[in-house]
Image 1 (cartoon, rainbow, N blue to C red):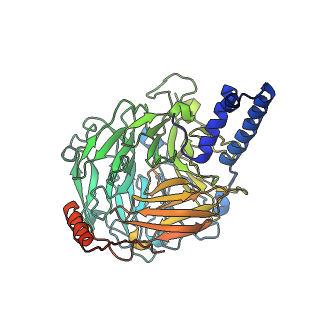
Image 2 (cartoon, rainbow, N blue to C red):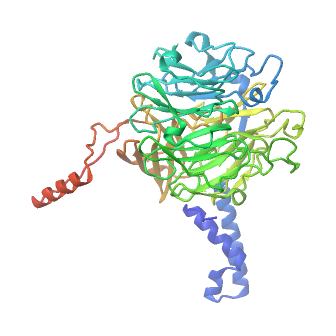
Image 3 (cartoon, rainbow, N blue to C red):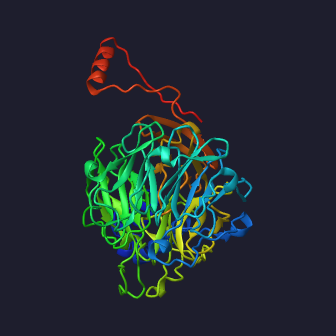
Length: 580
């Protein structure tokens, strides 16, 4: 496993090495045995200090009822089959534009779906009926907020099963929604468990990938729906755009658009059941290439989260799967657990699960990378559980919290953090619902009540929240690079699909003891960049596009222009300004 790129990661590596080798520094200096021992002791003390700084454990408090979440998910007669047992979910987004992240939850068939408006005071108000989104009597799953028509308001899309088709609800901008499903042209040939949005053709509007699970999808199934820019979508036949591997069995569950090879085009990573997880590289011409290798070895890919956890500037991929404490595949499942795939930088991956320490997640579902203690290192949460007569070991699975140690490894700390949840977790959202600067957790459970866990850490480091201006809500894929003390963190604003759940359209950075962000670089999906410097931490930023479009010239045009200007002794410096 490569050494961490941060200065603390490098120091930690050096001090660990000194302990194991008897201190090479002491050997070089030819000092005596007692001095060597002092060096070892000093190294141990420094290591402990660094680990404490990088691995401080957050403290969570259950505020579910206090915040206003007094509902349950469930089915009349119980979860009678596997699709019912694995579905559910939650969408997270600021639908009313007041700066607070709201939540939309699906409930099975025991009652209407609910929209919880964040009041900004630590509580939520249920407004589904007034907003026109209290869908009832249908089997909905995997909702997502996204701005499909570019009007600056987050719209709502839900998947469905047992004959329930996807629903697209347009945000009118006045707190209410209109069902525009029929007009949009979106349909589905089978169950739709999870959905993600991204601009795969880079035409300025958001397209969709629908994840289907089951064997009933026809061979010419459609997963990608291209946004036509006029409020309608056109289904793209898999065979025509290079989406392969779903011809007979389709077990797609956790799709995510992510530029994994850093070429500016959104690729696809899809966690899929029964050893069928897939990677598709965007060819930049409306098609994809299946580049899945044997490295992608998760046996039952369920949840999925994408982030640059090792600070090397590319996106890594975590897939939740099944770890069986019995070690015996008693049913249709594997036993070897989660997978962490570290990006080599070119869209190819190495399996670093064992080295990182994130394998044991029980029967995993929704997953999310997030910095819960604001130390500058992304942690990882994984909800889980399953029901069934042969799966008793999974009936009360504990939620897993893997805290980053700052050296590319993680330690499981859910109990110490106060995360005591043994319900049937499916969806998960990490977000700062109370605006106090640390990330909280919402868990959408199947066949039971949800759980809202408030992060009450008292010693968390500095933070910076960055979100999109209303006019750019469809600019998913925007990269934010935050540099402090020589360390650069990179996060991507996306509609991240964690499994039947999404992250809000914003990013949250932690900076430890640093008080100023030296440089914040924003790279928009169209290639334009903005740079801000000397930004105080502990605040929220709203970012918009540069005030003036930056013209794009071809290579020959740029070359000729530079030569002509140089002949006249003219030099130009173009500065791209940020709008906050």
